[in-house]
Every structure is written in structure tokens, then in C-alpha cells.
Length: 184
View 1: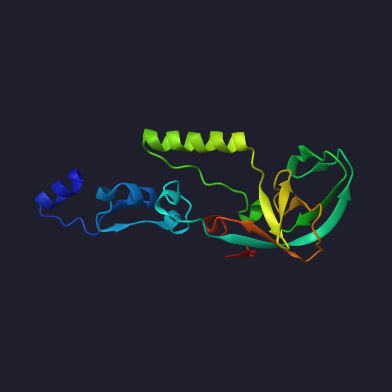
View 2: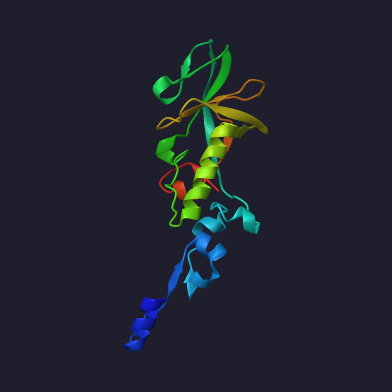
């Protein structure tokens, strides 16, 4: 604001002014100026969104490629770090990190409070150990193992499904630009 005042005092018109992203627009009214950039708030995907009554939007639809019955101790997913704990029925789904799925944008924060809130979210996520899930024919299924480039594996114990059935994931539409998958 001091720079804008300096430009104006020299007789220069700084033009259209905007300094607020989603979080600033919701929490720091003095940064709104002539306009704001509220991309992540419109999707309900910034830490201040829920406090202002905004909900997350966006989903990804993919298809089941095949079903498999895997024995106890079988490796699943990218790098094979996940091992089945018992005989497990799984589905391979036609979506992966090449589609932007399960990618995360680096956190952006500029104040100590931003970093503290991000640390709290990471610790909370770690303590909850909440697995990534999806919906198959109205039932919740866990993603097993790491997401691969072009596919992922889900546990389908107790879910009636077949190849070609739709699998629905909560997804951030901002990461889904280059994919031919269906994002809403």
C-alpha cells in the first residue's frame, strides 16, 4: 500500500490493484483492494474456507479395470510397500498420478500462523492415519498401497462390482487439468 501511495504521489496510476488470494480475501479484508483471487476458496480447498461455511467440491470418476483375489503377504501399489494382511479381494482402477490424482500442491504460507496451521494439519492427518478412500456402487472402499502413474488398487471386500463399474474419488479439480478422466 505504501508503494501504491508513492506511485500516486508521483502522478502515476497503478491501475487495477489486487493483493489477496483466497485465504487473505477471507481473513484480511484490508488486502482486497480492487479485486481478489479466490480460486481455492471457490472449491472449498483452503484452510480458511471451512471456517467461513464453504465446502469442498470436486470429484473424479474412473473405471475398474479388473478384479483380483490376492493372497496374504502380496505386495500392492507403487514400490510394493503395502502388503496384504490376509487374503484380499481388490480392484485395479484406471486412474493414477499421471491424471493428477493424489498429487498435492505445496502449501503456501507467508506468516508464522500459516505455517503453524499447516503443521497442525499434518500432525492431525498423521495421528488419524485416515486412508484414502473412494466410492464403488455406493460403498466406501480403501485405496491400498501407493498410487501408481496410471492405476491404483482398492480393497473391495463386501462390495459387489465388476470391470467397467465407476469409482468415485473426492478430487481437487485444480490438479486435474491434463487428464482425460472425468472430473466434476
